[in-house]
Image 1 (cartoon, one colour):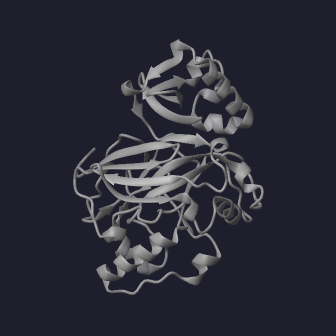
Image 2 (cartoon, rainbow, N blue to C red):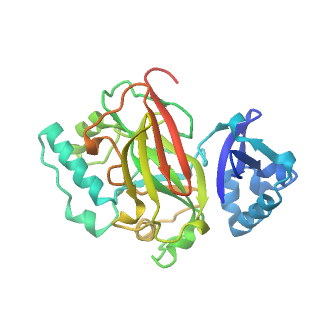
Image 3 (cartoon, rainbow, N blue to C red):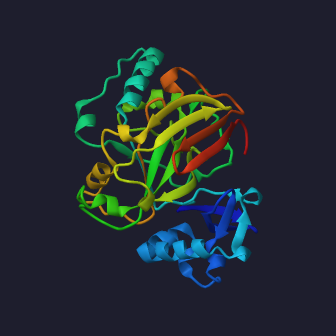
Length: 308
């Protein structure tokens, strides 16, 4: 089941994707009486019972609750995640990116041993999230913008000190994550050894969507085809099976002595050939970025200078 959030009638509406571009307003389908369908966060917190009820509503799909997908505005499926973290688990991406970064800066970059030993991650700005079809605002301080094609998970169950065996049960679903990057700012600040800051943190810089594919439809570990296009031209393709650390490993590592909560988002990091940096290409004003992941759909956004 694919779940999303759209703006319809001036408000955010939780929807399930039907065939074609039809969407089912789950709250309306429930008769407007079930709190689990008031938002994606509410559905996540409703747990297995909420998902079971959603599947029942999809099977019935009352005509009165069906929306025309062409007539709505997509939001991020989870408009304000409880927390956001982004990992770095594709070796090919690192090898390619470090080679380019060395060319650009004259500094030597190499994969540190710790990367192979444990998942590496940073915390994102959860307030800068947008969704499918929305414009990305080019930050004024950057001249070199890039996209990043990632698979993201949404945590569905609270937990601490979660084992790798238990970890898959804590995944609510999977989504596409485009972690936009101001490469020039990133290259400048990374020698400070405190992680990315203005290279990643700017309004509209974190993009999720268009849907969350529920975890029951994705065997673990995930092995999904991934593709990046710019203005209709394929820039790179990969598969999530190439993650050096699985999402189970990632969840176990992050949850060590730290509680994970329903509604948190964790990105895989960029798949190999999943960004322009790896192939020596930069984005331009007005470019349309289309990121696709098997089973989830295609996340499209336009990069623009000036106000959006």
